[in-house]
Image 1 (cartoon, one colour):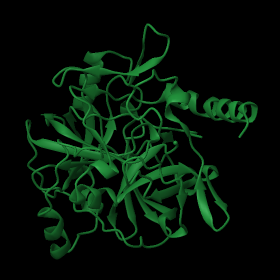
Image 2: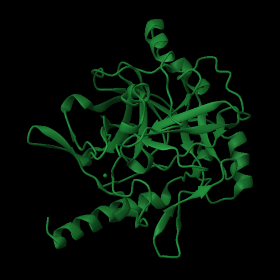
Image 3: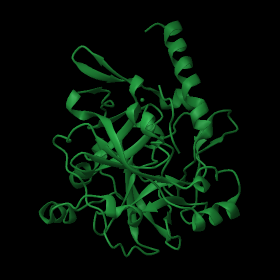
Image 4: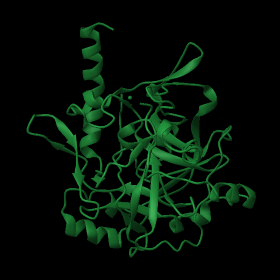
Length: 341
């Protein structure tokens, strides 16, 4: 692509994407940046990530020469990231994350799928990842990994939950304690091939201090896993508070209990994402591990009665996996219309 047409394409994509970023709810990096690419994670973690899905506007999933192409834009170019920022050279495009929790059922955030019309316009894409060191993101996708919405099974979104960022820590905490849940369950157009639904933590006993991890698509990037985090507070009826390293696009991501590998909640909102640097570019916001607003997740208890039971054999198989996300192995010495935060 020549420089002129490439610049026009980038500007057109950014014009669509940046207003959505401005409206979105933010996330943060707490302490060390614990996000791992798919290829950096353990085999057990990759198995869980295979059941994580990215959500795309239908116009960004195009059929061409026998397969589907995902329309993306460079992360660094879209947000004017400073040189050296993590994942700067990767593409972004997905607007939310979700998880397979039934043969044809995806769990995500309620603010990701607002109504039946939006659901119908969404494509659920499995396998948006980077599967080897030095590799590129998988933006050519086979038809078997792309699904459409058949219907919304159940959705809940307390209106108090949607406009809290920028209103101050006190109001954030008040809404954390009083807001209703934020979730959506979507039935896909057909059963998912070759991927296992993941079990949830029924009758959860999650408490402050428990270790957790998250798998999703921060800022619409190829799938990332992030651990090195814990539960801060479980006092709200509908939410628990964490220090997970998450960003916009992680909305709808499953939050897992590191002791059982079962889903404890759905990531829905959090703290500041990007800040301006003196150099005139943006950096990903960092704060101490126990500082900042924290990241809120809807408790799985708010929707577990609507979820199908997973057979004990499948559940047991997942429970014994050795999921380690805090230490990455050596690494071998992505047009967005509505990214949701």
